[in-house]
Length: 62
Image 1 (cartoon, rainbow, N blue to C red):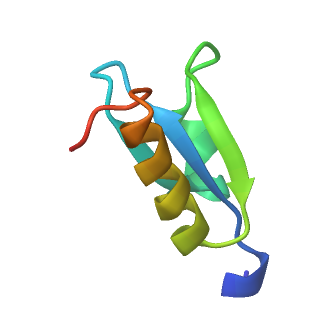
Image 2: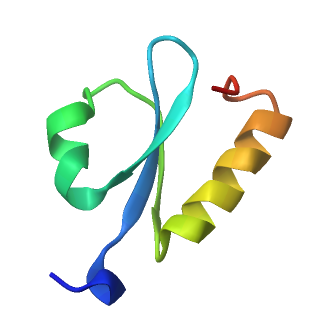
């Protein structure tokens, strides 16, 4: 899989922190009731959205 085809997701962990995962790791990490955002076209886009979620109080900074 090339980097152009990768999509990224943000998931909220039980601790309140949010982490960024590629689609391949999402299935292994995400629980059915976990809050998630995405997909994002690049990791940089996901990071920018994560910053916004932290500023909005939806995620705790790590």
